[in-house]
Length: 274
Image (cartoon, rainbow, N blue to C red; front, side, top):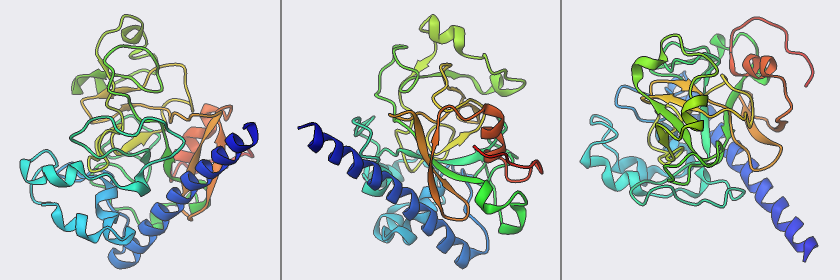
């Protein structure tokens, strides 16, 4: 029985890595057709994943979406409910966060800053990044990362599942300790992390390198406009995809300073071994 369990774990881990590779390949194919990568969160709050659907053999779902209307509009209700296997990591036992939404385990890198707008990653709000913009090198810049979904709970039980939801105004000057006391006091708690692959807002379709991997402090969303996040893995780290298409596992012991370098496309600093 232990041997079978290990085999299943290995197969699940391999499937999660393959999903990241497929997403990366789809992004490169999108680039070939559009001369830029899709926005991490566009004017209607659609995610980069939405724009990659035709390149993931999900063109029929893409046709269901009215991109001229908001992601929250009733016209997009049917598309919001669709569950797409490529966006689910079998390492995560939570399969769905909300019955009205198709979830995801893969978030797109907005950058090393807290604000989703004008960030220094590849997939931030209204971004249109080209290879020429990735001056740190595609092999040194994060594309995507896996994370655990929320469980829908509204109690502060597990920072891997729940986060602190503040108002948009809290984003200005936000500090790394923001949300810590709220989580201790069980205030402003949300459990809908990654509930919707169609949504590009913070902690739905995008993340920032503002907290360490599996950070003991809670993630904080400021009304979906940005905040603090650390990818949350079921093991001692997470699998991530890089802008050149390769996928690797990063241990949670990686230094926060290195993590920030990986999430920025143009910081100009050399990347040490990790």
